[in-house]
Length: 418
Length: 216
Image 1 (cartoon, rainbow over the protein chains, first blue to last red):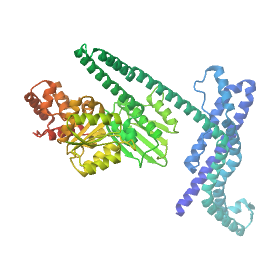
Image 2: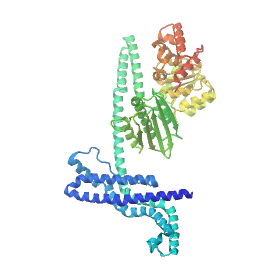
Image 3: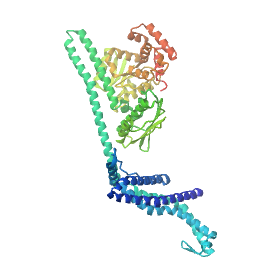
Image 4: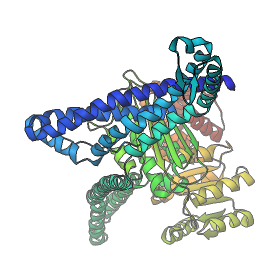
């Protein structure tokens, strides 16, 4: 217990020292560079240096975000606006990038953070190693160090004699004991200060949320419109056409039934055939819109029924305490369906595992295959569509697919039970 | 023979009642919801039940659940389940108790009255009636697996019909060959698949279905 306390204090001391160095050296340098670079925009040179410098600033800030999470478990959100999707090259591109960066409020928050980091942040961080160093100095004074130094104020204690040195050592011990209590706290405080300066404001957070919602809404509207078009076309070319043919056959039968019963019988068979085909087409269409098993049994059994149609051996593990909201069930089903199709078509897998479970308000789905790997989001892969579809529900998708496999696609959708 | 019918669509229910009565079945009740079906199963003790998978009030798989519950209460109670779509998952659940007297068909199959009535009679007699689509799903997934891949096209055809629950006589009639020829094909198939030969038609069908569904 005590040993871990001492160890934690020492580690925190070392971390505080590192943070202070990063603050005093790194942040000061970057701040000066940024200010100069932005000032030089008026001269033209700044246009070329600013994106570079600001990229360094962001890297510096992100490094601190990472340390905050790793060392003290403090989460600092990343507020940067995404760069425009297709940046232009050449001078225009540079100007655009600079303007974009300067328009992003996060850039200015970064610069403000550099200022706090080189002052308050650095001071708080340096206190941790400082306490340890000061404590050790007190002990060294009692060890006889006061003599060569000769006359010294240790904090508020004049050290001119062994008595003074003795009190200095006492105080040093107090510093060291204090360090074991407050050192980790000091490092944490440093990160809290950084979090306050770096985190987006409520307004920025809302703006980001609105951007995200606008994007996913557009996706949702687009995909539902495309879906409706597909259904319309399928009905028009399929079932509807068959029913027209059937009606025509029936009309002809009516006319023929007395004149030519043999011909009428033949047409009746044809009409029955048309109705059977129309039904088959409608069934396939329904399966594509909302699979009947999904409506009847929910997403767990729907996925079980789905894998029974796959040519690859697939194990399904489901752990859901009840039926989920219908839209989520549907999105999850089609997401799994698409990922499975990908695995069968492209991965060359001969074994697939699907795992669905619900925890902490999230439906978590993992689809793993033992195929060749190399799957990724983007580049017209089906996974991009899945990601979009899940985005409407604030769901996320992650792919881990090293070359040579295995591929693991994980999805998370926040949802509730109905 | 006393039939219990459960179907929520009026037109189809009405048509089924008329068709069954035309073939000399006695329809003891034609119900339209799950709770009614459960009650009818308990009170009327039908010889065979024909029911839709999806029934009110929940419009989920109430009909199937009622049928499965009734069969748990009375093992072997003949049940023919109808649906707008067929799922291997449901077929497997119906066949799970291994006691036969089970049918699972697409609603489209009622277009052909002769065949449909034949299926009802087969199920009522303790046999099996599986929809061709279910069998095709089972077969297509394992088409190339040995030893299924080693069957001749004719043998595959016979296997498919056999898995649907047809008797040798019926298969012979459909393929326009003699019953003896079919018997020869079936013994070949059983030898190739390494299945125990059985004279009991029903046990034979269940063995084939279990074979096709295994390993999944």
